[in-house]
Figure (cartoon, rainbow, N blue to C red):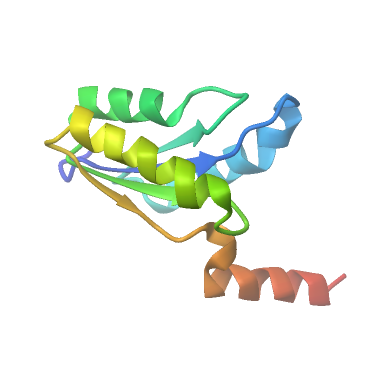
Length: 123
């Protein structure tokens, strides 16, 4: 991990079909290429591993001081409104020396919506 000890966890839902994760793995690789100074990991809420707790534990062991959790969800449904805050509270208690921050869902970010609209217009 870099000197800044920053990390990003892309947090996706998870699915039974392993192929479902491929776009998230590609996204994780692209973010890592764009941010080589930062450790990028991918975690899942359910049905796939690693979990959010597994990723945070590994990052803590690597010396992370700041972890940004980016929900790779289209919108802020029940999982992001109810489940994620509980998980982040548990992580904050388990790792009080780490600053956790949660962004908006990817699908709610204006640049992401603009990129999707541009792609749709090309179809």
